[in-house]
Length: 333
Image 1 (cartoon, rainbow, N blue to C red):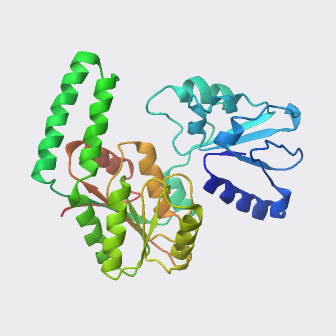
Image 2: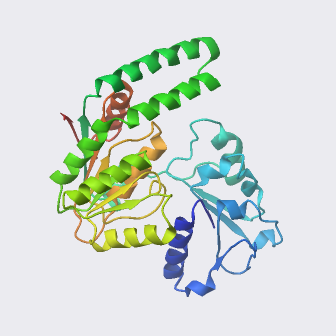
Image 3: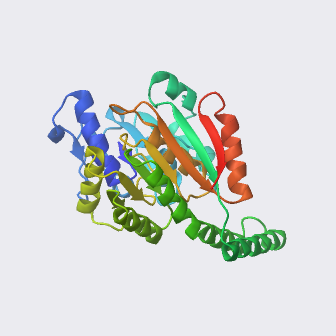
């Protein structure tokens, strides 16, 4: 079993032991020693799996890659060549937005997509709870709006001169996204929505560590029990914060991208997406953090803050896809 992060490694370790009814010690966690134990479950993170030298009987091995889209990157693609009789990849979003990795690497190694599972399927099966998507439109500050519009014109010029995939166009896209996500209005609105939902378990997403820190500090000042979770914090701090959130000792958990992929926090009742990237993958992953069922949870709500035409277009498309599945509302801040 290959997973992208240590957090997911720990989660698979615990879940596999419970599912198969075996002690944790019977499952081998592959460390820097690169030791494989045949006849049992072996779990490794991508960085470790990419360093493995095959020394096992191919016929006795099944390779399972969780979040398999990551294995199509140049850094980890060697994992796809590990010898195994059976192979399976798991991903909510196997398509890679910036290359042909699904077609050229994942499908040749793992096989064609054999099963797909929609939000409608998940809702029918009780894998997710009924949910409301609240899209909240706000106005950018004038200086932010002017900078955004200027960069949009520069992007159009760069595309016409050098192409959409040129280094200059990509640099400008990244700069524009940074300016858009750094709007102070996003922080203010996230704080207002958190206060509105006091008494419920809230997960707040942003793209900026500094903004997350500000949100956390202001929530605490307002008397809302809040915790901060991002990759820059120690492992112990992250574990304690997540545990406190699950136990209800923390009302609001503020995070950047550390909880985007795969990790379970089903106790979340309200998600506030204050800032995000344009990728469909991140959107699906963040919704997944909020919609999973938990004891006493019968419905979930997700607020998404938006200020530009492209953001609105993506959410309008999502609304069409989820017709009959989610209750979608639009409002102005």
